[in-house]
Length: 305
Image 1 (cartoon, one colour):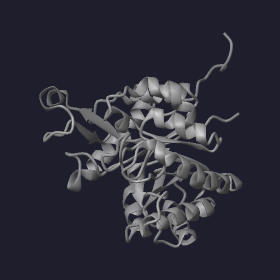
Image 2 (cartoon, rainbow, N blue to C red; image 1 turned 120 degrees about the vertical axis):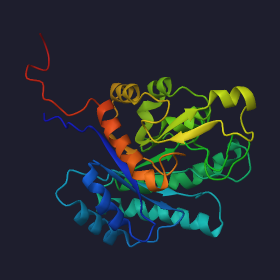
Image 3 (cartoon, rainbow, N blue to C red; image 1 turned 90 degrees about the vertical axis):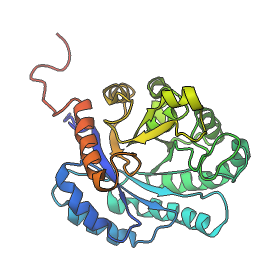
Image 4 (cartoon, rainbow, N blue to C red; image 1 turned 120 degrees about the horizontal axis):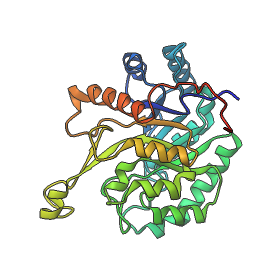
């Protein structure tokens, strides 16, 4: 059996909702990204088959995949943008095959400003239908682990899937095989949760991984605590935060994860604006090294002495 040397690919995210995602894609591909996650914010404002065609043309003969697409918003309530988000999920599920994608990722949604438990009935209704729609098309759904807009257990806006206790409740409500997580260490570190043992417990539910890190500012926490004037946790581009991604990738391999780690940029307080691509390319090369560097075929038998 042939072994894919990029069983864990290193890529980046692309804002599909912006005016010229193809122009952006063409500019960044030469840096060596191995996968792309196109994503939309609250609404799908593009002709998806046409976008897929143009993305494939831009990629050309490069070994670049699109395994996951993103749809971010709150599909559980009925404001205009919420309804557009739900329609966007349906559109991405129905059109994933044009991109070669097998996973759609985003937020669960939430009954706004209410405890997580109160969102579960609507979660079960909406995602029960969407999971069946996705299963019929061979697509998996992954919920990102971001609290979003300062959400917590008692209140929030767009997402309930930011806490392992919530994951247990969600997957108890809907134990569907095609429902999982889009995971990154950053959002767990913001709660002071150690991401490494979390991979061991929950890695079987990781359908996609974001490349985003965090710096925990312990000096600020010890002086000001959480939620004060001084920010206690910075979101960082991988290679600039506290996480040892060699350990993360090793643990991902041990639980059998295959797929992509797509860098989520635009959050680092230092490597942003004119330094955005400096940070992303550093993260790309750093994560490739944490993966073990270039693939080198083993010259001997793979089993036995």
